[in-house]
Image 1 (cartoon, rainbow, N blue to C red):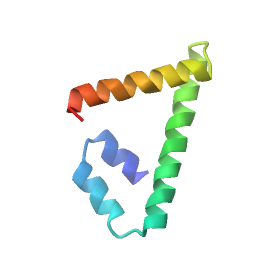
Image 2 (cartoon, rainbow, N blue to C red; image 1 turned 180 degrees about the vertical axis):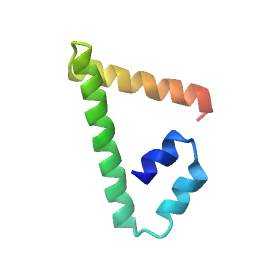
Image 3 (cartoon, one colour; image 1 turned 45 degrees about the horizontal axis):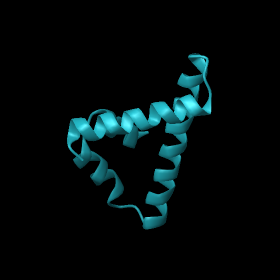
Length: 73
């Protein structure tokens, strides 16, 4: 959950500090857990709007495009 808080605060240095002491396997587990949390949240938003997986995927793609445009990545 601390990784989520760091991401929401746009604190990449804080996120790095949280990950540094972890093994590669532990970092992979964190990444998988965060991806699962994001997928669950996107599906919930899509379902609330009357959609399903297709809408969730479209929303996810739009969020990525917006983030890349905003942060130039």
